[in-house]
Image (tube, rainbow, N blue to C red; front, top):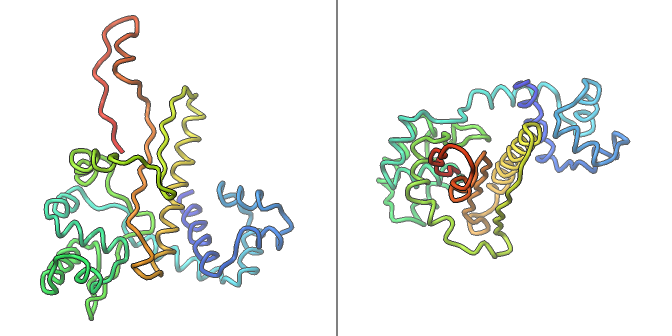
Length: 255
């Protein structure tokens, strides 16, 4: 199943690179666009269908296999020790985030109060951590996968909870490119699982768009943070009104 998911992600990336849309595939396959979207969302392909898609997009299957192998050699998470080292140094943390956002060496030095020599030293530390590869000419090659994320409840996420959480929410979220909505409800286990899977797809789409836009000039891109969270939770003030034994203290919300 994991290999199937990886293959579909590589296929989606290759289709986007070639400018092939779901609508194009729907026309070629004589299906509705909704059916094609559902096929990719559920990762439900027959070998015949996969071959038809590759033939239409002029993708050699061996290319997909090689790309999938390359992706599997990249890391999707750092170790707790690696994250701890990065978050302990503000400038190292900044350069790591810049590298993730595919900001070049020259752009880092031009934008931030970091000298050329200092930037080289910071990138060398990230190279030692196997987060990047510092190549000749100070080129930065990421060694993390397209689905890379910080560790759940790891040092960097705890830093967010302790120091950046309030700063992040200090906004009305009323700009055209901002959105926040709090929704409460009661769901079955099946529905809860469905929501979690949909949120995971949203984060993958965010990652895909981030990688696509990395080709644009730095001036046309803005730092964006997507916070996705869902959990079993009731406001403590409500929980205290329940009949029965006193409830245990509610855990704090994690992003």
